[in-house]
Image (cartoon, rainbow, N blue to C red; front, side):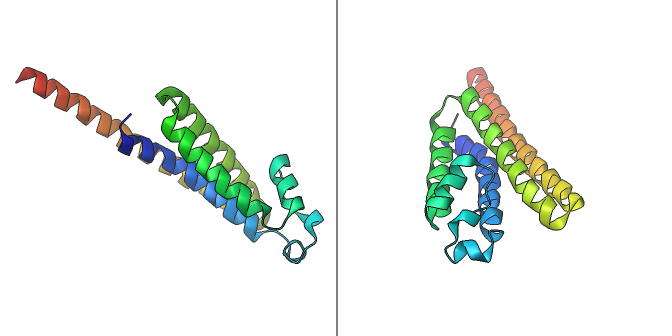
Length: 144
């Protein structure tokens, strides 16, 4: 895959991860931010462990996770990268949707999932159009 296509393919996974991180941060109880780390509210056992270790744990692990997503999404072979990025996208969309359901209800959760699905397929369409154009350009240059 070309660099631009690889970068485009990473966007949905990064978006869903960022949304999950932000909403997780927002809905931590005030007591957590005031130092009662036992009140960390995180479903991911590794994330919960890091959050209970230090109040900045969520931010440290989040930055490292986003970097890892970008690196693996960019450098893994195409098919493995696509599966990895789709998995990350689904996992973090689901995690973010749980927070939305709790705080805003089912309808808003479904709207969020619909918008994420549209984002994923719009970017997939752009990637496919780019690849078709590239194939078409190669065929034209071979016919000249």
